[in-house]
Length: 266
Image (cartoon, rainbow, N blue to C red; front, side, top):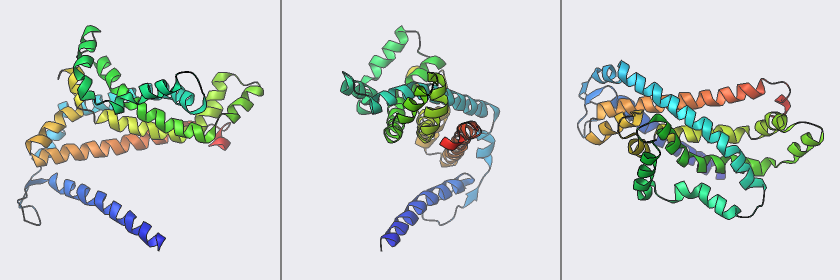
């Protein structure tokens, strides 16, 4: 009985994902699809010429690169922060955790003006560096929680044993810690990429419209009701996100699994 219920829930979940993607795919080559027609009346490929022009492809590549930089910096910050939260007790730990989670507790809209003024005074407004910094902020809470949960599972016993055997801190981190928390790193990297790659409000706020990312050219079409162009943008966004996430996972796994010294730990 439980297996049947689980299978039913899984089937419903798959259908709820597949059907919207299928409809999105039809809209990519549809010019007119009036309700309540079952199939589109007119088809068009004009949208493909617009989506895949040189300027849009440059924006897409720049957006991917910016998101990858954000992921890299976020992971570097989140690994020690998540270890501190998960494994150690120290004075002010609750406040530290609250500060880490504050970007998802406090709505960005409520502090947008203060953020904008601060970035202007620091000379970071309307710059790629400013966009990278502001997009790291909402990524850190998710990365810390994901990696922190893995730290709670694996603990630090193997790290202590490696240090007792004479390994320095860098080798302990590289050959012991990182392979053990690899699932968390992959999960956090995936989450951070999705958050940063799809970010619109913060990018518009700090970039001021001068630094253009993919969501900034996609969302106006979604809001305007141009379903053909909006569907194409959405499909490209979806495909690119999936490809990049797969490449991130494979690259991280290849690096560590390829190392014979630590393959037994993975």
